[in-house]
Picture 1 (cartoon, rainbow, N blue to C red):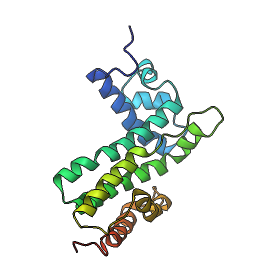
Picture 2: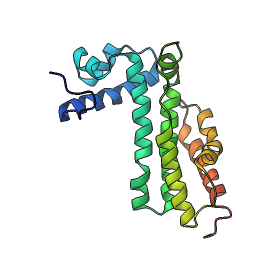
Picture 3: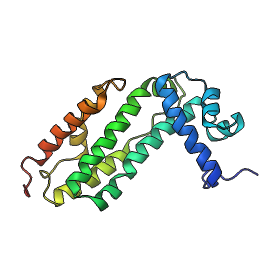
Picture 4: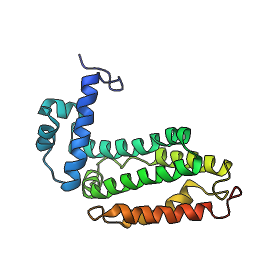
Length: 192
C-alpha cells in the first residue's frame, strides 16, 4: 500500500530524498544532461527508490529549485531570533547569493525542465519574497534601515547577483555587492 501523496515520509525515505537532492544539485550544476541513473548511484539509492521520489527529470529539477528556495526562505526567522535585524538581513542576503549561484548553475536544467509546451512551470518565489519582507520590516522597525524598502526594491538592488558567473570565484564579488546594498539600505535609517 502506497502512502498518501502528502503524507510525511519515513525517516529513511526522507534521508534518501535529501541525499538524492544533494547529489543532484552537484551533478546537474556540472551538466544539465547528467544521467539520472548516475545521480541515483552516487546518492546510494536504487532506480526504484529514485523514481519513487522523482518520477522524471523535470520533477527532480523543479524540486531542487523549490527545495533550495525554501531553505533560503526558512532561514529568515531563525536569523532574526539570534541576531540584530540588520545583521540577520545581511546574513540572509548571503544565503540568497548562494541560492542565486546554485540556480545559475542549474539554469540549463531548469530551462530544459520548464521550456517545452506542456512542461510544468517554474515554482514561484513567494517564500523568498515573504522572507525578505519579514527581514526588511524587522530591520525597519529597529531603525536599522531606511523606511519603506520593499522586497521588490531589495531584489532590484541585488539583481547584479544573477549576472555573476557561478563557475568563477563568485563569493568576493557577491560579498562586495551585498555590502554595498546593505550600506545603501542603512543610509538615512532613523536609528543611525
